[in-house]
Image (cartoon, rainbow, N blue to C red):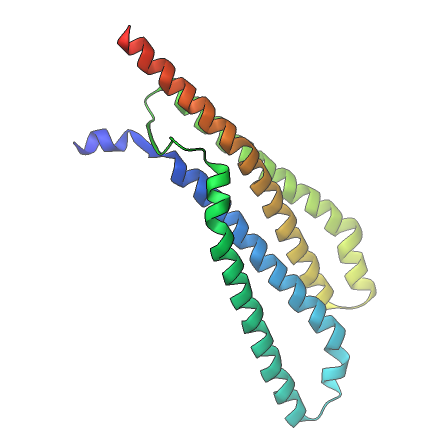
Length: 188
């Protein structure tokens, strides 16, 4: 009985979790970008304060960071189900992987997401190499360097999420058509 369960894959969960992971990366990237721009904006000002005021600024910054994190969690909770529903059409949850055409669709989907991720990383690398890193170096700012990394994370996650959303729906439709064709061949 366990051998039969190993032949199945939960495609709905696979597509939803891929979209959810990229959404979490986007939230973390936005928090990084806001924090790094804030640190750049007040960086020199904080260094000139006395120690008591530095502690106050640190406490206020921690409170602000926690508020931003709570707002991000609220956005995540509110939109993660919607993203999952937008990515996966109804009717596809567990499918048998022994079906050759289903395996082909799943492997092709995985390759497309991987190639989109690699392309996103390479495009960000080029942007970072020619624009973001020299910009941060010219201003001698670690904060702007962190901003560039956060921007890269956001860009890559957005590209992967877009491809998952665009292909996830069509992949589920193709898998449903393959399963329907296999069922009709079996009934004939």
